[in-house]
Length: 159
Image (cartoon, rainbow, N blue to C red):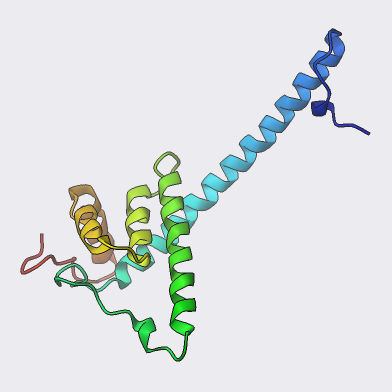
């Protein structure tokens, strides 16, 4: 049995309408899936992002260089496995943040959190530039205040 969508549009109006109806039904299914994913991602960011922001050390951006990787202390090549998993998770978080720029969610903040997890040259400088943007910093420090943590510090001062 062949699928209705695989058939060419016929010159007969009934067959043409059947094909259009099948395409509209699939579109509605994809639209519903998109809405569900949007709702799930929005709810996930409401839970995960504040949890991560509150646990970030207040002086994370105050130092000229970033914290040393804890994974280097792992035995054998295990630190490479942990580093790979951390980077894969970071890529996923950044991708979700990009999606959240157009759907409900905390897009820019999610991208910053994802970038914190990734390892690439110039990362620390990029993070500092993003986090120091007024709307992002205001949101981060508001979350940290609600979690009873000190605001983020940059250099010798707290903005």
